[in-house]
Length: 181
View 1 (cartoon, rainbow, N blue to C red):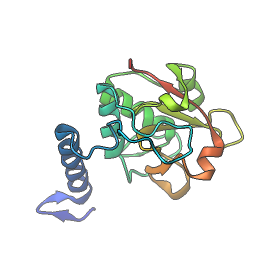
View 2 (view 1 turned 45 degrees about the vertical axis):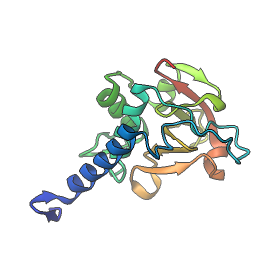
View 3 (view 1 turned 30 degrees about the horizontal axis):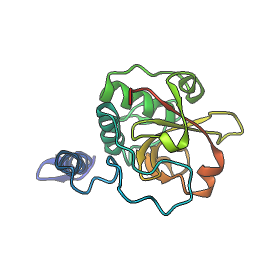
View 4 (view 1 turned 180 degrees about the vertical axis):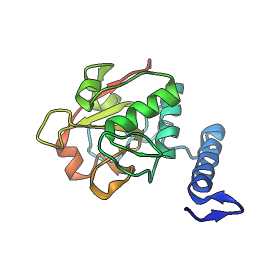
């Protein structure tokens, strides 16, 4: 059984606090680098978008994705309480946050939506990687500032990584958008 704080489970306490922090940042529009375009150009030489503004659906997807940080990994997992794999995580997020049915494997998901050039990626779009010597074998949710949320099998939990990480930048294949913009 998880520890409790004032009778509330620790995980729920952390997620609630994270949600309130994100709500304050998004609602006020102050210091929300994940969702707003910066006026100064980025110093990075990366071809990926840093801070394009998210669509309303994209913002919801990002908030749900961030709320899953720390959720355990489980191959074939489609439910946060039992664990998630990459495609299960994306399917769950899109269903909950945007009422969008996006199912199947990462490769199946890559066949849907519209292709997006790296400099046009917005928060909430999906990134596809070749991590198993198979095209589009891994999927992640772009959250802005060259970062993404995903459920890798390594380290066993949903986490944030960067497109500037050599491992991921060398395995990136494409991005897809499922919302207008």
